[in-house]
Image 1 (cartoon, rainbow, N blue to C red):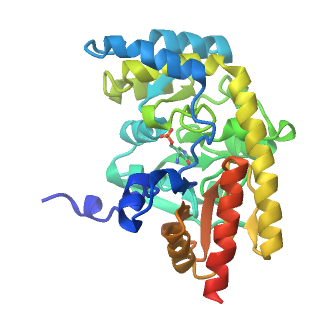
Image 2: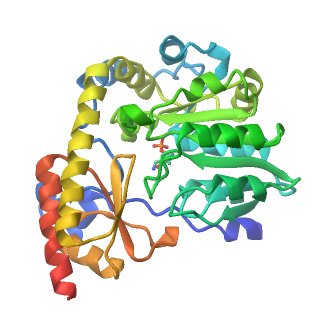
Length: 363
Ligand code: PMP
């Protein structure tokens, strides 16, 4: 019999796959707009795709378990030592590695209400206690999170920007938190959407690693780099933390196609810049659309927006009927809200039209 703490876990609910909705509704896959998983609407960088195709010639071989090439590319980008990098099967893997290395049934971990769903999953899987701190204006209340740290707390998870709310924490607030947190608590700064920050929001968290040996920064190739299907993320930390995470890491956790594609994607700055611009413009399009519909939304610093519709389950069903997939977030204690990923201009327009109809029907 599995332990009760495993039985208490609520499974992660992913966005509905296009093929599944096509079958359910009798729609053509080509007519479906999926804006549910914070994917890059431009697809992947052509350089990454070419590198992935080339790497397919070697799928009979085990990947390089140390990810030499990708690690070298990250060293060149961030100016850290190779020993400060941990590669993951998505950044989700990194979150689990942190839990595996730092938690057991005698410990606890702190995270915010409305924060990314994998934090409680990782914490509970390790048998530890999750301490959920009430949000402030849907974002992290860092002062309350600091106050919530107990003597048995070993990890605090901070998402910046947060998913699903898109809230952003300015760097001074995070630095204050790092200064106030005990040294023996691992601070996981989840920056999955970091590359979407506006120029005036950007900050150099990597520079903090020299001062805070209890900090780990997690990032991903799933979002702006457009490689969600390949599952690659990375952690940057001090040597001691990186060493511990690498000890509990599955030896070949990132496959060779993913390693090659990620290294190529990191070098395609033109693609990243284009993805950023598409997202910025798409966000303006969605905000104008929400304003026109009189809907409340949370200002977002990611590649998605969360908006309030009231009976979200119903509105979601009406969107699905029209072939538009967004993300209900009732499991994040936001039953009146939906989250939409920012798409290409025509996808955003399709979504807004479908939303207007879905709301009318609800009247
Ligand atoms: N952190 C946050 C805040 C996220 O939203 C996500 C993806 N939904 C992840 C981490 C994990 O993404 P991946 O495993 O694809 O890197």
